[in-house]
Length: 168
Image (tube, rainbow, N blue to C red; front, side, top):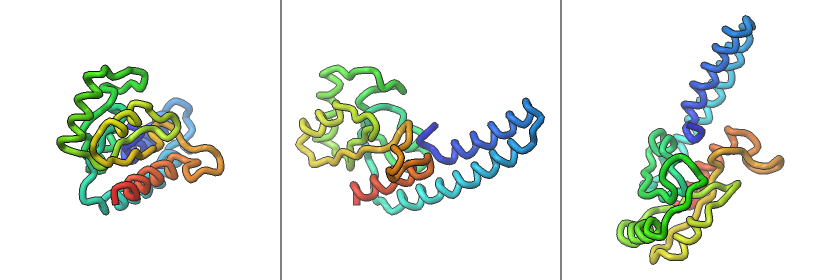
């Protein structure tokens, strides 16, 4: 759910409520609400940025982008590592099928993690006959200090802007 800012906002409220319940400290509710409000502003910004795209068909390095796709209207055409794990390895048959999919149907981008790029995405880029950019996104962490993604909110805005730049 990391990739869906609206769910993160709901989570902040729930965590604040639960902490207040467990500790008896009502300030947690206000804190959760404040964070949720900030996240909802970010969610609207991400949604607005991605609404600029005519189409966003992606092949991703793993299935964690499902929440992102559902929330922001992008399509996941293929996944290198099925399931939520980033530890799996696709078979050569899986990669052949993804390459054929890219050659036949295309995609607007190949997506991988900025903090830990998946080498199979690079292999797909090399194998396909299509000219498909590789876009590195923050998918489960934030950027280093001094980066454009020091907070979760900045990371999600970075992601939306990176996709728009690559697909525009």
